Image 1 (spheres, rainbow, N blue to C red):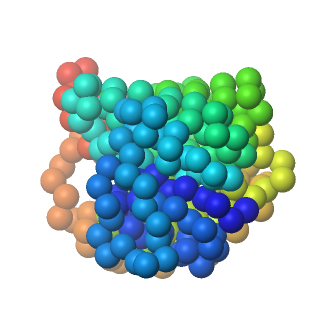
Image 2 (image 1 turned 90 degrees about the vertical axis):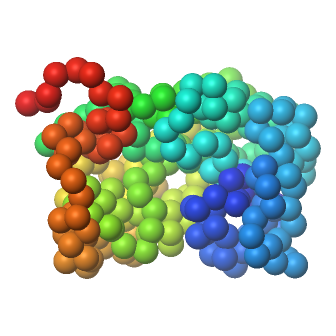
Length: 267
């Protein structure tokens, strides 16, 4: 696979993985609402508003695969989430179908499962427990991807991404840390593995404190190169600076759970 579209290329994660992807996919095309900073001469860019199907279809033209990071990446008002992550996500898959794209890798999120307690060990077959409107949109995206895979034969991998960075910054991230190099490895599985019909995996590196069963990713050939515990001292220093949060500290979704929370304290 050579012709790959990266949506959300101007965002934080997109910026981290662009240099890695350029080494693998020589005809990588970037897309976002705005042009990414420090755009290189070998990085073609196609502006597209995900809420506009015609623009998304134009961006997808000629592509073999799509890495869909685009959308609103944190919690926000419903109208914002609706347009960027619900309408926009459906448009992305519909544009892929219309343009004959072979594979889509959907950047789902741990926040689709955020209301599981931290004491739980959660697999890919567990029901969604979204912790926010953002999390709801990611559960929706997984469902849309499954429908397009089953109805139209599109190969789809949904990655429930933890927290992407060079190292975990607090105790919660020790469980959900995902190094950019490991994320790119998962993306390559989604684009290149011959057996992808519809699959869900968790986006995490080798995390010994993990809350998730990622055995399906390993069965597909995933071998993370980075380990959260190598940065435990740094993470715990960061944790000491966090304010107490009895709700966020109980659930896997952290502050996404405690924001706007009105139920009783968990036990």
